Structures are given as structure tokens and as C-alpha cells.
Image (cartoon, rainbow, N blue to C red; front, side, top):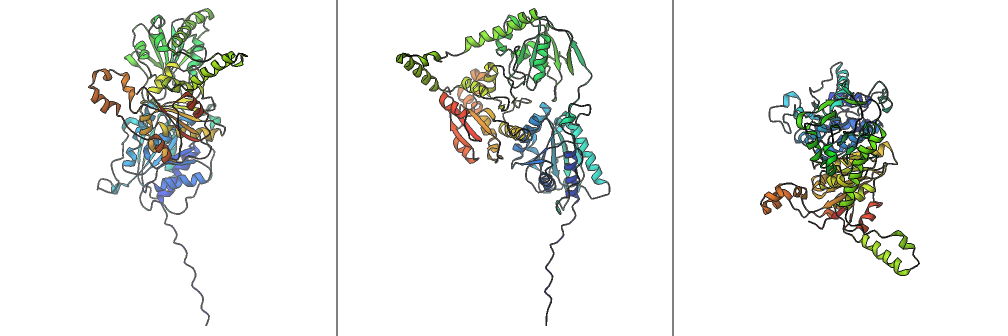
Length: 579
């Protein structure tokens, strides 16, 4: 008797998941409006969003970056957004995960960076009853976000996905003013069958930027434009993020250019490097008008100038929470239009005086230069050539100090590279002495926080690599405490083609406070313990834990070798002997 074998069991069909369908509709709707990058941290309640992002990545529509730690994820997204100029979404689960985004949200708020925070949450029936990993996430970022939505859990009702796509557009529009928050409740089942990707629709791309139809996330200029005529008492101040517009304006006005190192405007014939010293002299006293772009943060002399009653202050409104306005007396406008052209003789007298004084200051404060005479190397006199060789060896044996480190990293960075500078003594050292150069420089100066520097730099490096495969190295100039604050960012593998080199000035603690009054007034032991916070971190071991190469650069020869190192991911420790 023949028996028919039983039919193989069919796998159970995955249940329908309104959460998964809504997550796909939301992210696909954002992609259609220009979203390119999504940073994901793992979690159960956010699985619908994470799996939707992964499906869109496999379809070639977006790029997903996975970070274990939400704090690192937030700053990685910040770096991606800074480099691309586009919104970047961050996905995280409920509970403390959301709070860990807060530092990056604060920086994005004060810098006007377009982050889209997608935080998963429990549905209404699970809130306020002590459910696991549930807290009040509604409004958790306060007024640090440009818009905040608490979205009920999807149910699969007709028309629901259209509402989700409308929400995607609202979020992209709101991101023109900084970070936005979508708190998204999801009910089980949190995931179902393979997400179905809608047909791709036309997206807003870079070609739209120069036309009349600006992408939704681009801030448009307001109507307040002030007309200015050139004179010989005006200066242009370029703070962080001012961009090349500041240099153009200085030339059009025939004005000296005070450009901080992360301004994006530190180049050209009008740039004044030693501006602190020049502002304290007769040239500073002669200033009658200052035009400010970006966010100045690196000196006391600039705000002191802008607070003077005899100086007219015009601030061009920049992205971010607050217009820069020390003294509460500036006229804040949307743009400046120059009427007429400066007199060449007046420019030579006014700008030339500032530049010459700056050059004199730099020459007088430069350390003795032991550089040998190159002509000696070709001498037929062996004693002369020997003297040249000894002088050259002396240079290579020089111990690296902050000035040398800042100048060397700056000199080695070119337009195809990126330079990220942490909030440390090194950014002020660089601001005091590095010459004009039109390169891409970034620093988290919205709040000038020490945290997130490495994660921000990796975001910048990832975006730069995707935009131009020939992009060079992203160099990061930071102190030891900035490294320790963001050590988690070292523990994430980075894809092939990304080059990030960290140059860590290690003085075993926070010597930046040595510049402040507290160093002279506090009890020395208390100051050492609670302000400097000395440590004994093994930086080589820390680098090895994340799979980064490591070098120590104690001398100029070591530093020169490190600046041309072939390793894609490299930590260079520079020990400072003065501490």
C-alpha cells in the first residue's frame, strides 16, 4: 500500500505589521525629499524603523550607519549633516537611549545643523504604568528642537500611510531651522514580512539648490538686507561657519578680515592672523564699524570690540539658535549688500596696516628658527656640508610642542582633505598662528563642547568619501581629554576608503584651564584634582582596542612620518613635555 508523504510544513506567514508599513512609508518619504544618510542604534522598540532603513539601504536608496552607542550615533549624524549640508536621521529605541542623543542635539541646535531624531516609544496604553524602558519622551529635548511631534501608534487604518508621508515632508521643512524630533509610538507586532519598498519617486537633488525651488531643508534668506559703502574704518569678523562669503565681503568692503580658524574664511590677502594683538593696538582703536558673520568664540578681544559704544556692529544672521550679539547692541540682518567699490589707496593703507602689524607680531613671537641655509647642502666644503647636516638633524630631534603640532597638521591639510579641531588648547593655538589657507575645517563650536569630536569627524569622513572617492584624509586635532570623552567612537569599524587620523596632544589632563584665573586663585591640590583631572590612560591600548593603528610622535621626525602615514585609521599620540 502506497502512502502519500505529508506535504512539508509551510513557514508561518508573518503577521501584518502596521508599525513596519508606517516605518517604511516615513523613511521612503524622507528619501524622496532628499534624505541620504540614516544612523541606527539597536533596540527592540525601534526595530520597525531599523529594518525599514536596512531595506532602503539594500535597495540603494539611502546609506545606513550602525552605531552601538546613541551618543556616538548622534554626533556621527551631526558630522554627516555638516559635511553634506543635508538632513540626517538618527534612529533609536525608547528609554535612556533617547537621552543619550541630547549632547548632539544641543550642538545641532546652536549650530543650526539639520538632524531628524526618530525615537521609538511605547503606545499610549503602556505609558505611565511602569512599563519597561518607558519614560516621558514627549518634549524631552525641550526648545532645543525646531519642531516636535508625538505620533500615535499606527493601526493600518485607510489613509494612514499618506499621513505618514505628509509627516515626512513636514519634518524635512522644519529641519531648515535645526534638529527636529519625531517621537514614534509603535505597537506589536513591531516587524513582519519583508518590508515592501514603494516605487522610487523623483527626489530633490543638488541641481535644485541653485534654482528657484530650493530643497525643503535649505534656510532661505529673510528680507532684511543692509546696504553698506566701503570706508577705511570697517573690519569683517568671521566666526565659526562663516564660510567664503566673509572673505568676499572683506574684499568688496576693502576691509581687514578677522577669520577664526574654523570660519571657512581664513584665506586671502585681507586675512589678519594675529588679530588679537592688532585689536589691542591703534588699529583696533580706529575701528568704527564691524560686520560679523558666523559665530566667533575663540578670543576675548572680539566681543570686547563689539561691545564698544563707538563701533557700529552689523551681524549677518547665521544658522543656529541665537544671533551673535555681545553687548545686545548689534543690528542683526539677513545679508549685506556692498554699494560702490573701495578706493585702492585707502585699502592699501587700511588693510595693509593690519596685515603688516599681524606679520610683525608673528615674527616677533616665533621661536628661534634653527633652519639651516639650504645653499650649504651643495657646498664643496665638507665642513660646511657637515654643519648643514648637523643643523638638519637638530630640527628633526626637536620635541613637538603645541605650536609645532598645530602648524604641522594645518600645513599638511589640503582642499581634498578635512580638518576637525576639538574644543581644547590646540584650537586656540592654531587660531593664533596658522596662516591663511582655503581648506575645509570643522569644529563643534555651537556650544564648544569637548564631547563627540571623533564621532563627528567619522561622520564627516564618511560623507566626504561618498561624495568624492578621491577625498583625502580627515585629520583630527584634539587633546587627550577630548579623546577619552569620545573613546566609544573608536570602537566602530569604518568602511574601506575612509581615512581618519587622530593627532592627540597628550598633557595628561585638562591644561586648558591653566589659561584661566582659577589656576592662580584655587588651592593648588584642589585645582589639580578637580579641574585638571589627571589620568593614566594608555592611548596605545585604547587605539588597539578599536583596531586603529598607533604611533607616538615625540620629535619633529616622528611627526613628519606620522603626517604621511599610510594607515587608514591612525591614532598619533604627541606627548607634551611641559606638563
